[in-house]
Every structure is written in structure tokens, then in C-alpha cells.
Length: 580
Image 1: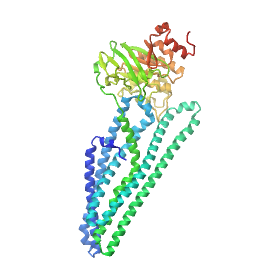
Image 2: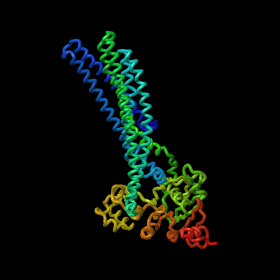
Image 3: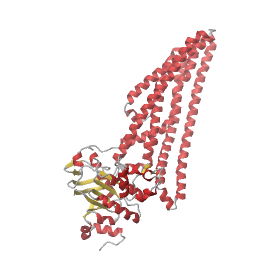
Image 4: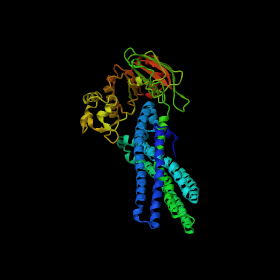
């Protein structure tokens, strides 16, 4: 039930101590209210007037009010604490996602990451609030009440001790069943969230291809799987709640029966018998509350576990080796890479093997090769999203660094992927991705440079129109132009990373974008991964990759003259036979 990593949250020990103190005080309030309620009823039974019970009733109401005041204090503390932890978790999660880069998002699924950062954090907050309070009450209140019951009637205390483990056993059995169902439900939920985001992003394409109706059945099937998983979990939840209520009610009835028999026999006085009878439901109440909220916390536990799993992923260290001055890229800057080796997680095959590269100043470096040749891996490595294996030597402006995940190096970069992500926000704020404080005028100029002028004029609210998820859908070419506008707006970053930015676009859209992208490349260090050969004429240096190795390098003219791997690759892409 409990994820031990929960105890590792900052401030948890202090919160646990405060909760323990509140539960301890509540236990005594419960005993006091039971004691004075029993005294009042016994006094009336013995013929005492109502006026004689006023003091006892006052003590009862004070204990009753104090008990619920402590509950309010506990809920306030937990709400505040869970809210703060939620903010910390969301911030840490987003920092982790940005540190790990696009590979982590692709592996987990965009929908899952988005759901984790939004709905998952809310569920984790609910888990912290419910679990801590119910767990602490169950750990303390029943045992303090039980000790007091033993001072009143040993037999009743023995019955409570015997019954309590039996109820716990049933809870464990049903709890494991519920956990298995909840795990499957959460996994289905992850699939549904990924599926929903993918479907939403590709809705326009599906409609254009006439596949929207066919895809509708796929969406229905995934939704139906989630519905069945949810209903299955609810069945177990209802069954466990019924079983717990049945056994606790039966236990209280057994205690009441024995107390009644002993009262009739004269073996027990009314005051202790009545006090025990009032305390019996209170003894089982923390257990019932814990059980009733158990299923409500399972989703939160799974969500928090998923978040903590992401936070536990290894991130690069030594991220501040490169100074501010050494990271600034200009016409005299130098980059030297020797024996670069990179492998993906759980994969023995090297994605990049012994790659060597040197460059000075600005320029356009093209990366070409067949699918799986290592182009995107090289881009991700330069961006700091993948770390090289030991033995790689990297030097920027004379400073040796262990990897490219240097904070100052990444501040110099603009990354333009195959599928730029558009946030549910205005078009202007999406363009402000790298410069959140840019003026409207600067944003408009950047958008015009990226070829978005006509598109903006067609929007109902211009640049203030909401785009992205739940907003106006944009085509692949338009989304790429937004990414390019981001680069135009950010004039201080001098390193551009293009990871096949036109791979999913038709040739007409690509040609139009090319006219926009080429001016952007001036006075920048550009790494441009592509499989479209018409881009190679624009490159100052071309690296031909094959299975992670550089098999050819040079300018377009030099590589044509060599008639090597570059020419063979061109012939393959054009569907021609290699020269014999």
C-alpha cells in the first residue's frame, strides 16, 4: 500500500510527528467523550436529575469539539503540505523531462507525460492527504482505546484483539486483489491518455486521408478497455467495503452481546459496559476509514510511483563544467569531438561508434544517412539529451567537458525536431517559447520571417488565437513554421539543431519552408539531420553516417568527386543502381 519513497519527501518526518501528536490527542478526546457520555447516561439511569448531568455533558461536548477541531487542524496541515509537495513534484518532474529530453518523452508517451504532470500530480496530492492521515490514525487510535478498554473489561479487550487481525487479514487479501485491478486500470489509463493525445494531434491528417471513421472504432475499443478495467476495480472496492463493514459490525455486535449477558448476570456494572460499547465502534473506525479510502488512494499511489520512477532516472552530473564565457559561440569558437561512442539504454549495440569531428566558428553541418544510421542520435548527443560512453573526449573553446548536457551549452541552443510541440496557449506565447518576455511586435516580426503572416491574418483573434491541444489545430508545415519563428525570435542563441524538420512534410511545403530556414542559418552553428538530398547543396560540411560511423565527409562537390559512400547513398535514395 505504501510507497517507501513517500517517506523521502522533504518535511515528511516533521509532518509525521505532528500527525502522530494529533492522533494521540484525538485518541484521548475519544476516550473522554465516551467516558462522560457514559457517565451522563448512567446518572440518568440511576435517577439523577438532568441538571446533575450538565457538567458531564459540557465535558462531553468539549471533548467532542476538541476531537473535530484537531481533525480540522490535521486537514489544514495536510492540504497545505500536499499542495507544496505537489508543486515540488511538478517542478522536479518538468525539470527531469527537460533534462532527459525527447527520448524519454517518446519512450513514455506524450499523453502519459502530460497526464502525469497534470492529473497525476493531483492524484499524488490526494494520496498524500488521505494516506498519511488514515495511516497515522490506524497506527495510534485503536491501541490507545484498547488499553483503556482493558482497564474497564478484559474480556472485551480480548475480543477486540482476536477480531482485529482477522479483519486485517481480509483487508490484505482483498487489498492485493484491488491492487492488481488498480494497476491494470492505471496501465490502461496510460494507454488511453497516449492514444487520446496522438489521435487529437493527428485528427486533421486522419480526416484528410478519410480514415477518421475507421479510427473512431479504435478510439472506442481503447475507451471500452478502460471502462471495463474501471468497473472491475469498482467491483473489488465495493466487495471489500461490504466485507469490512460486515465484519466490524459483527464484531461490535458480539461485544455488545457478551456485555449484555454479563450485565444480566451481574458480573459487570453499567458504567464500564456502556463505556466499552461506545468505544467499540471507535476502535474499528480508523480501520474502516483506512479501508474505505484505500481504493481512492490506489490511483494516487500509482501516479506518485510513476512520477517517482521518472525522478529516479539517472540524469547527467557535472552539468556546470562549461563556464558562461566558454559556452558563448562566435566566429572564433571551436568544437572538437574524439572517439564519440553512444549507446541507448539496454542496448549493447553502439548507436554511434568512434565518431570524430572538429569545427571552428559558424557553419552548416549536414548529417545524412539511411534510417538508423545515427543522425538523430548525434543530434540528441550534441543537445545533451544522450550521454557518451567513457572514453569520449569533448572540447569546447579549449574546455574539456564530459558530455554536452552542460547548462550553459544548452542555453546556446535552439532545437527544432521533426514534430514541434504546440502548447495549449496563444500562438504568440507558443512563439515566445525561448523568449517568454518578448514584445508583441518582436513576436509578429519573427512570425512574418517564418512565413506565418497570411496564416495569422486568417485567425479570428490573430496571434492571440489559442492553438495546440483543445485549440485551433495546425498542419505539420504550420507547426514547423512556429518552431522556426521561435528560432527567429531568439537571436542570442547561436547553435541550431534540426532533427529532420521536414521529414513528414510534402515537397511543396518543404520547398516553401526551405526559403524561410536558410536565412535563419546565417551566423549560426547548424547541425542539420535530413534524408532529403536537396538540402546537402546548402551545407558547408556533410557527414555521411552508416551504423553510427562517419563513412564519408566533405562538401557536396568534394563528396561527388570522391564517388564514395555519399554517391552510393544518393543513388539508393533515387532508386538507382550503384556504379559498377
